[in-house]
Amino acid sequence: MSKEITRKEFLTNTSKYAVGALAGVVGLNALAGGKILASPKDYTWPWPYQTLDPEDVRIRAHHLYWNDKDCASGVFGAFVEALREKIGEPWTTMPVEVMLFGRGGGNGWGTLCGALNGAAAIISLVTSKADSGKLINEIWGWGSSEAIPTNAANQAAVDGKYIDKKYNDVLPQSVSGSPLCHASVSQWCNIAKKKVSDIERKERCARLAGDVAAKTAEILNAFFAQTFTSTYVTHSYVTQCQGCHGTAAFNNVMTQMNCEPCHGDPHNVSGLIQTETNIPDDYKLLQNYPNPFNPSTKIQFAIPKAEKVSLIVYDIMGKEVKRLVDYDLLNPGTYAVEWNGTDNFGNKVSSGIYFARMTAGQFQLTRKMNLIK
Image (cartoon, rainbow, N blue to C red):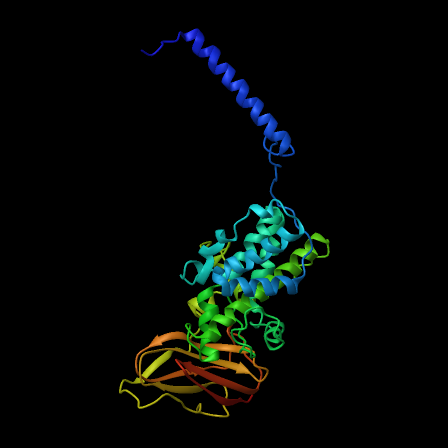
């Protein structure tokens, strides 16, 4: 028969057990150097940072990209790894996988470039909100205006510095003009004549991750050394657009991005006309007529199948002057567009030699034009 205990006996016994357990934990705590009962160090935001070697984080980001961390976690992880080694806690507790969502412009949606996303995350973790804005503007502006992969990134491949040697030659460069993954990757693929699935495109994004990591280290190093000076300047086209759509007449837009790559030039009055609907045998970019010309000239082109088409005027230095057709999806046919000798902002350009470059799918051709006044 089981023995029943009184409430007093129960409380007395449990008190004894609790005291014994506490004594055991105290003993273990002593053996463990006081770590069991010690409170964890209270690390407050921003987290600690120490100067890093830009070339070291370049190699780390490139390696992480190729080892299942992709672009966003690649850049973020390069800093976490390096700061773990230099500082220890709290960096030992940060999983780099927290940034995996940023791959492919956000889970493959092609929005914010994953590398720039990872850079912004690390900047936001080690600086205050008041300081982070100017540093993020700097890296996003740099990433939008720099020819990527940089010469340094290409040279690192040629010199065999990368841990993962997937493609060791120099890759073509492109300027995205935007922090968007879609704009960046698509433009590079058009210029390099490569597909998104090609090894060269993947290596391009690995080198991009390294470039962004290295530049972010430069920015953070300068900031903590109190030598950082912002070089980012809002694109003139954005300033022009914001004059109406920002805080003035319409007040319906908030952006730092160049509007034109996505929305085209709403002030372009030259227009695009389909002159023939018969399906051409091949791609064509005809010589402009008249040539030489003043004040305007007509440019004709043809496509044998539906394509995204761009027709852009460049000056003799290779600088974009006028975007006549902005990667618009066009049906098969023959088209004509007029260039009235103005730039993207409606300003008259000087006389001289200009080049009209047409891109449609894998087709690309350039014609020389002579504007005289």
